[in-house]
Image (cartoon, rainbow, N blue to C red):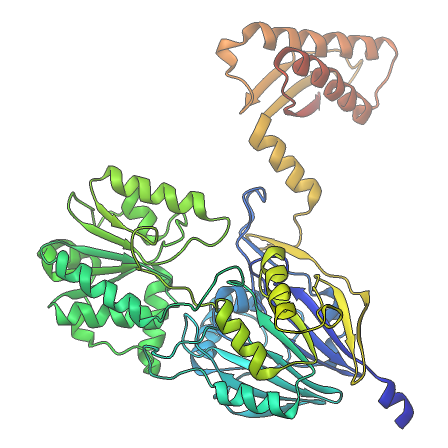
Length: 558
């Protein structure tokens, strides 16, 4: 028995967050114990028509639910907690996280009204918890949200460190610097594997301190002393919101929060003491519109150009209570998440059309990243000095740049492992290698449906969005299958029917001749008839328009 135990290997299984930005999730498995790090979602790409959210495929975890000892969450961003309401519909292990992350998760669970109680345990940095064969210590880091932690996981074969999302900020807004001493302590003890944030692995130097953004805000509060100021940022960036509130108070301005997530998150943060704001300083949108402009600052969602967000509606003139006017100053205090660039610039263009003064990252330091650049990545590699290294959290180019950085620091390329979703890395004290894979990938969330939209549905949506729909209605006699009326053809998103009467009339003629030929053959196979209508019309319409609309035949028998 002991011999088998010694032969057991630690399995590292990325289920999301590698070769992509978002849906972060990694499982550590040893024997009969599984520990899962993070449970995130991802914005859908433009080719995922109608999809609301993308989450990891957790079929492997569902199959091994009895082995899962806990989920440990590094911080409260959506790409690390967004999938929890969906994943936890089928599994129910405890969750361990810091205070703000706990509050955000519990708010999310309450919103989704899950039928079973999920235990969310609050921990603090430097706390240690025993979870099966794993012992996890939480390490304070800096990021663009309060309560971010790295994880040091002691396993039977050695220590694994997962940095979570981090940067090294020596002057953070909350005064709590990253706990480099603990990283160094583990480096002295010996680290088997380091998994480290790769988002900014292409960028030289250090990431600027969050406090620099506060200095930039001060400049624009001074310059815009006679203007109304609107600042769009992530609702989760409590430190940045705190700096805006501090500047507003200093300049005698009231603060209005706009956007549901902004109101929810700031309310939670204020209740926890993470956000220091006098309730008397907060005003409603109606009040913000009626007050003198120089006495108001609006903090809103929409820094990613999301449709229906606070900033999007302001730029489109769709907010019934607050209207932007010429001379207002809008600061977009965020960088565009990869894939969101077009939406962000569309909003900025609309703001300019309204005569608004717009300040964004390309023009000034109104945003700093929450992720480490090369020098910080090198620092963590040096302090931990891992036996093996796996870059995580990034697209393939980010992972590759991080791997090359590790090589330059003297790590053997054979000890650096480029992860793939579902690909299993096996380690013991002597060796590490990829060995097999588990079911993994993406699950699409559309409304209340989870995973019920597959490739066939997406293909149909793509066709509908590109070439439109043609509906063919045929009414036949139930006695002899003769046509009772002329076939009816309806076009939606394909052609404008009034301008293409000849095309429609010829299409009707094709359908009518087909029905008469099949009736002569005494054929009453409706599925076959529908397929023939579809095929013949498809060939004709493509020949005439070089487009292939979705064709939907309907046969009514009377």
